[in-house]
Structure formats: C-alpha cells, structure tokens
Length: 248
Image (cartoon, rainbow, N blue to C red):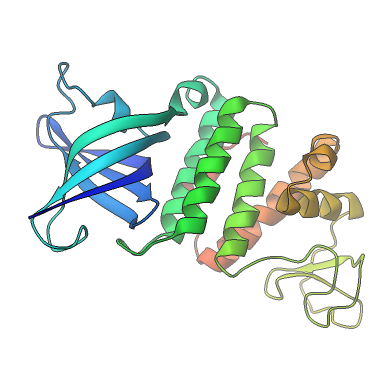
C-alpha cells in the first residue's frame, strides 16, 4: 500500500455507482492516471467540485501496490485546487468547446497510462491558462495548442522551408503526408495550396507570435483551422470528436 502525490489537470469524470466517479487526469510525473474519487457526487462532498474537467489540482492517491498505475484503480484521497480554469471556460461557448477539444487531444497523445508526458502536461496547463484569460480568440488558442502538441510528439509541421529538401521558403504547397509545405520540385499529388497569409498565421501560432496571429484576418483563421484539423487527424489516424463543435 502506497501514497503518491502529483499535480495534474482533470480531463474527464465518469459516474461510478451511486456516489463515486472515475477521474481521468494528466499528471506531471505519471502521465495519464485514472483514479476513483469516492462520494464526490454527494452534496456534502469536500472536494467533488475540485475534480471537474479543466481543474488544475494537487492530488494525493492511495494505491494498493507499489506503483500508482497497476491492476486496480488508485483512490483520490486528498485534492487541493491549484487553478480553477473551468470557472472561466465553461461560461463561454467558444472557450468551452475549444477547451474540451484540448482535453481530448491531450488524452489521446498521453494514451498509455502511467507513462510521463511532461511536455504535453505543460502545454495543456499553459493552454488552459491562456484560454481562461480570454486574451486571444479561443479557436486560435486551440490551433496553437494542437500544433505544439503535434510538435512535442514528433509531428512538427513546417510552414516556411520545404519539409522534404529544406529549401528556404516561403513555399506554397502543403502536404499532410510530408509534414508541411513543399517546394515546386518536391510537390506531390494531392497537395493543398493555402494562401501565404494562412501559412504565416500557422507559423505564428506554432512559434507563439501572438501579435501576428491576433491581427490576421478571419478568412485566414478558418483556412488555417481546417489545415490544422486535417493534419491532426492524419497523425492520430482518427478525428477528435469534440472538434465538430468548435466555433470557427
């Protein structure tokens, strides 16, 4: 029997029995963890509200084995709120749908329970913080999060230099399979030809150049979001279900 302490973001909560929930978190040290929170659906629960999706929390787990992730689910025995991002996110439809897509994406990239995914965890915390602050358009925050999540998981896209031969950009032809833009010599069948402004926007979101991203025209936002969604689906091999509800 062992106690573990970690901080994490609540990805989702599922009902279990009459009063309990199974909580899925992305934690700093242990990656994705599923744990049972007993009695949290009761009105007198001390930490039920702290284990809602989008919450950044400090959690103590009780495990019957020497490892946190084993044959049985650990128990959440203590929870302290680090940042209640959900309070600002759930009150706005755009932020809520973008945030839900971020949680689902983070869970997909941290698919194996118990394996640390520190970069993904830090990206999620930073993304939710930015989303909750409301200083940028919610769909831009989502696209930036998706592009950076792809990059830290080995699928970084190139939006300037040719992804195949490295020819310095700007280059116009975008290929999902090749990993970004291609020059005229490396062009393959099926390439998209997005506007140059869209490629500049996507490069700005990937690098964190919010001044450029925020001043981009809405028509390029929509085209860019379509490319990001297609690129994500290509590498995950199936779509993110909550993306269909995201406002564009």
